[in-house]
Image (tube, rainbow, N blue to C red; front, side):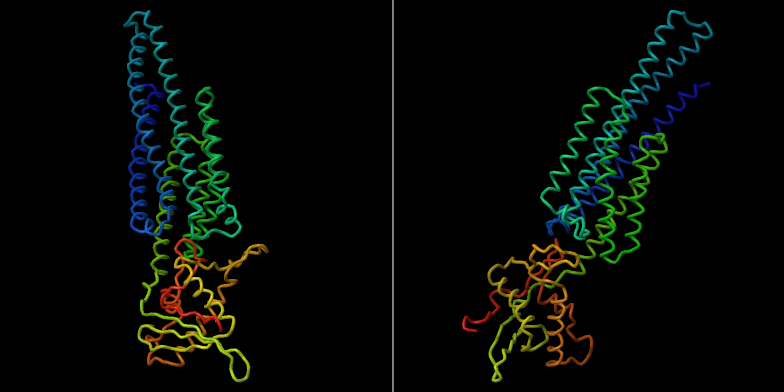
Length: 422
C-alpha cells in the first residue's frame, strides 16, 4: 500500500506535466498564428501591436516549457521517494539493518528540500515570464487604433515606454533579489500579480472594450470585459489557491484571452478590408476657380474630372468648404505624404490646434459635391449613383494607423491650385 503523500505527489507531477505540454504547444501555435496574421497584413500596415501580443502569448509557451522540465525533475524525485519508502517498510519489519535509518532520514529530508527548492524556482520562472507577458501587452497598447480619450494622452505620450519598462525592471530586480536571498515564494508571486492587476489588466480591458465597441462588435466587447474580469480574479487567487485549481483557472483564462486576441486581430482585418480605398485614379483631376461676380460677391468653384463613368463636373461650393478642400490640395502639392488631422469629439484642450475641427466639415463637403454631381449627371438607377462613401474613398484616403488622419487621394500633378492673383 503506497503512502497517500506519494500518490499526491505523483498526481501533482503528472498534472503539471500535462498542463505544461498543453501550454507549451497550444500557446506556441497561437503565437505562430498571430504572427502569421501580422506578417501578411500588419507588416504592410507597419503595425507592430500584433507582434507584441504574439510575444505575450509566447511567454506562456515558455512557461509551459519550464513546467515540463520541472515535471520531469519531480517525477525523478518521486521515483527516488518510492525507493526510500520501500526501505522504510523493510525497516519496520526488521528486514534490514537499523543502521539504515539515518540514511533513510537523510535521503527523505534531501528529497523534500530539493522539491521545495524546485517549487521555489518554478514559481520564480513563472513570475518572470508573467512579467514579460504583461510587459508585451502594455507595449502593444499604443498600437491599438481605438483608445479611450481619457487614456490616449497617457498611452500615446513619450513617458509611456519609460514608465512601463521602469515598473517592469523594479519587479524583475525584486524577484531576482528574492532568488538570491532565498526568501519565500509568496513575495515572488505577489510581484507579478501586482504588475498584472495594477497597470496591465485594467488598461487592456478598457481598450479592448473600446476597440470592439467602436467596430460595432458589442457582444465581443462584453465578452472581453468578462474575460479580463475572470483573469483578474485568477491573478488575485495565485497566492491562496491550490496548485491544481490554479492550473485549471489559468488554462481557462489563457484560452479565453487568446481567443479574444484572435477576435481582435480578425476584427482589425475586417475593419481594414472595409476601409480599403481604391488605388488612386491617375486620370482623376481637380482644379480650383474663384472670381468676383457682377454683384460683387465671390463665387467658388471646383472642376472634377476623370471620375469613372462621369463627365467632368463643375461644382459650386461655399467659401468654408472651398477653403477646406483647397487646404487638402495645397498640402498634397507640397508633400505627397502630408496628412491633415481631425479633432476628436472629446478633446477640450485649448492649446491643441487641429487642421479640421470636426468630421461634419468633411460630411458637408462630400454631401455638397454628391448633390451637384447627381443634379448635373443624374443616373437612371440607384445602383449607378456615386454615393457619399464611394466619393470619399475616391477623393480621400485615411491612415490605417490613426483613423483621424486624412489626405487627398488625387495625384499632385493633376491638381490645379488658384493663381496668385485670385
